[in-house]
Length: 300
Length: 300
Image (tube, one colour):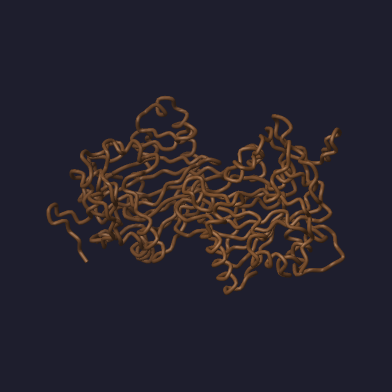
């Protein structure tokens, strides 16, 4: 079934009415390419099927240490904390995310060009890539709040104008991920279904939605259907391991009452052949620090 | 190290000042007895060490079905919902717990006398037992809220007047427990340490604390120490499996954003040789539906 909004040609209409719907994905998951890359065929096939893959030990322990120190330096920097690109936790005023961190930190900027990272992203989207969004996330122990189920693509499409599902996120763990400290849950296979969400995007929605999303949230019936069909996987692994997942993966996270914090570096690579248009479901695009519009290809 | 409050003879002083402290347990975990029971020696030794044990398939699938139906009947009963023994979820007005449920439901009352349940409890506390507290818990999908770290004994001692650590809780799962739907986390071995908490018990504290505990909450330094020493285990298992844990187990649970609800029958057996006294840290005892003061031995 192909659903196209005949007026706009939009393959993935969302936030356009009061009834949610499930739309079949119209895009490849692994895009064809003539180049090879570091991901082996079996892992790539599994990514195609599940919408995610993991890499153990992407960073060495020494590198984990180095990036952890970088993270501490950033969060202790008064200028960074005051920056509009820094998001603080609602309840505790602690730093929760720093956006566009690949431009703020040269070490993280360099990591995005590292073949271990970049070549994997290029291999999945089948072209040159640029960084659509980057951030570091810090979920504190004891009172870390999670994120409800969502597809990143839904927001990127509606609010940023990303046309197709041709982007991949990489989350690189700087702390150990247990099943119980608020790690990412994904529904394997649900990336083949687009959940069209109800509601209209309010002005400056991003300011609230980066803390807790209200618009672009899938309805419970859709989540129940997807969970019944696909089940739920959790990303667990040691510091230094990485998770790559499709832009339309259905994912979320619980809260964290354990003493073990959870931090990661988060890089979103979009294909240079999939650059942003006008938003499909919002009056104006979000600021460029959450959705870059310069589209500069990342080069080694 | 034995800490005794010389004025009161209290082995486990709590809520008496503004400084938390860690006190070594002064009681056996498995109490000596001349009787045998259904728990094998190896499992009993592990209970002694970790403060908990699990039983796969304590209930048959048919029994799970029967008790699930019983639970639905109870929550759909307007009289039960209006009863002061029924606790509703803060955010959604859904039934979260029904206390003294072994008196409300004859099926659950009978379950408490079943040798699979009763004989295990008797074996651990080394004597006849009575039901200190019973309840059913329902954590809904999507918006189930968890419970922060705590020791049940701390509350039972301070607010109910339970003298010693000679009680065991049994949680019988009526739904599958995954690592990600708000299941119980325990710190194996932490039952040998009593965390003396700060603060004073306000009047009628139980009304608020049954929804979200504020007093009798261990401080973060103590939780960090215990977690570093003991780590964290999670109780996972199919519907019908059971968890038995020591009254002083340090435990808690995260929230539940998955569509999978979590429900259980919860029975607390206290030794008839450990009956309640005046509260050790509150002006008046809690109502008998949360802490029975009749001390009637459970008989087959």
